[in-house]
Image (cartoon, rainbow, N blue to C red; front, top):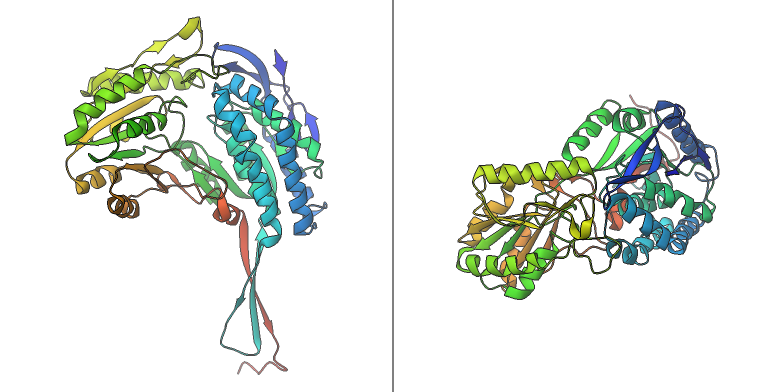
Length: 489
């Protein structure tokens, strides 16, 4: 049993109350590490360290080029420890190793390099005021202390999405990972020590929402919150932040539709639809969990879809041949099974899957790839985020009907369109209420492209220039060059 400490002010610290909680390996269901159960006292230590680093230490006074060079070193540190980080994340949340390591050694490291290069390119502008004796210009400035609250499905990815732009923008940060998957973020702190940033620039506290998350969000010296998680969690964070008028970025849930038209290439589209939901066991906020099929291809497409889904190999997430890994924690495992039972009771047809299984004798939390047909738009399965390997299949006749069904959701994170008619694809992309639209592909992402949602999927953006802008405030400066100021009256 491994015991972790939390990280603040450049030190590894024990929780103030001396308490820890266990984290479990989803593949075996067994506890393997103890995580600090931080409370308000620990939050105070971390936030004050971040505040000193920004307002009193060298970080806030560092010029942008110097800061960019340090952020680049963070990417180098992650590259040096990618194997260890991937191993711990797979052990702690069951994410397939092949889904972690290539990202760590490519575009997640590139996130640090990308934002490092952006640090000294935050140019303001001169505003034409129509008055010759007035110079008005803008500056982009950091908030100071940022709180980054991350989810359990992709802890390293989400942490880096917040760390890289926040630091390049000149902020210091306190991370708070989910209590269901904290170990890889603590291991990330060990790796980042190698970059030798000033103490307090990066801090991580662990624990539960009420004991650690809420004191972090409400701390008077935290001026910006970046949250990734459920709609319910986001609403709670937004409400707490509103009490002291703090800026918040929200990346929340999704119920993303994939629209398949009768001219789509059958084999490619089936593979794309399956790849958009099943490999991460549905545990992605952009998972394409609603499949909208045009009536003329409904039966043939479902037949091919079932063939592909039934070939999926469930098993050890460390095995490169595993198609689908386990559900990340027992609480969510039970929740997904509850959604499946609800779909059965609602009248949807279970076409395949739907069962908890133990592939290869594994003792963890596995659910078969599950497909329901005959789903209607008002069924809970068509409206509620399951966040599991469960696909809801619906039928449409016309393009307008497909658009109406796709937009008939409280969510708006992503959508996919499969068609060989590029005019149709671009027209629908403009009309879909979603922050990301995929045309004849699904699940692509890169550091340079913004990610975020419409409606209850959140607000603000991560990645790209817009992701950097969310960690900056704009200041307008007015300078008078007049030789004298006339009397006011």
